[in-house]
Image (cartoon, rainbow, N blue to C red; front, side, top):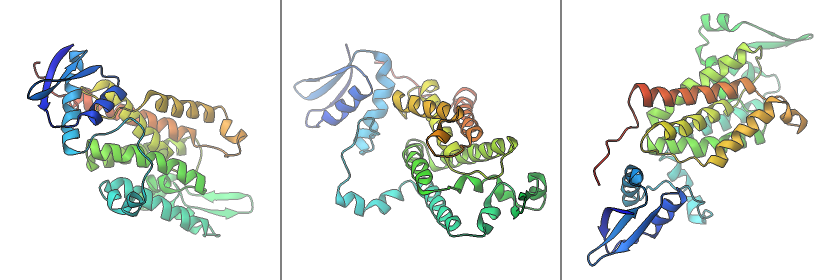
Length: 291
């Protein structure tokens, strides 16, 4: 053990200590005459400790432990809280509105306007233009809008919950601009990849979800100190689901076909973006302080 920090004796450090243990940072808190001393088992954890202390002092500590169930007051003030993470909120709002609109569009006009290419129904199936012609005609939005298409409430809820958790984490720990760039890269990449696999009717935030997951996971493994602390079981769970869908498991469960290429493209794009930012642009590196 080595003493690394002193804090005022009148501060309650139980919350900070709880989170340190949740992140497997071995430590002791010792009382002295005029202060509380934090001792670390491994001095390499010192930069991460400094980040956590700063966030704890600002009341912004990012918890890895389970939070308490929301109270009525928390639900009532949910909209106000959501505005703290504006892009995450806007992405989910747009997805919900578009999903509602296409569910009432019996002629599929809205779906055709927002899919990767315009199409119309013919007796033999679907007739559609190649993406190149659509882009030449000025339909640039088609590179992005399939991301907001969801074909059912469960599809929207599943993707929305993950975007809510991972998106606001990035907005909070980094910035709204960082999330915006990651969203654009992953959404366009996932849509183009799925289109190149021969699909024209697909949609959803799943590719973005995997991009956010890969970004957070690999950022923490490349940067120093880590800032997201995605739990390993969560990462493994989503990878298992990815493989399960690849082998046709989703169809067996009655969920229909899944845009597997978009999932993989999202995971790769998010992971690569984290690698580029940390390794080539030097982000995520904090100078170590002597202890």
